Length: 243
Image 1 (cartoon, rainbow, N blue to C red):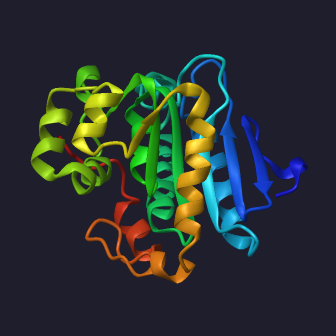
Image 2: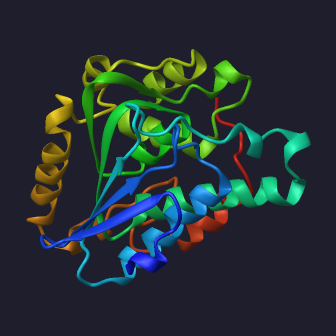
């Protein structure tokens, strides 16, 4: 992806090992606005179209220890948006998550610090999650008076089990890294200084296997990895009701 085509708030570095490192840097907290979801989609498009790219690492480039603080509340608050934009926001974000979950690429979320709500959803759509020793992660929308989007809750349920996911979502819990590891919400916890190396090691392990293997997993939520288009259509109606 040419530097001139990289969306604002992002940095994309394609490595010789056949993977891209996507750094999200939209100060102060990587709030997920419609523009940021569009940017993520554009980058995923470019990486999937590049035969030299077999995997992606998503990381934060913020000054603070935050992966993403979640969706931009201004996109959800009626006086600050419109019905058309509200729909586009949910269609764009859910399509991106479905695409990410079903991509041919191996994907790793390198989580530094706080990772609530939309940030957590992005990590759940990745194949592997490595997190620093300090922070928290979870789908805490209920604490704001918002239902957890159905697809997001489904992703968490697939990772840690439906009953555990239901309990975390209904109570707006944000487990710390060690508890998240015990629950299976993340796959590895490391010191901050080792985060990038750990993410690259995990990705290299996945890339040691043929890519075709990642295209055969099927999912009730998003359909086969090899064909996410129908899944995107199913979830494009909006957030749906989760917990």
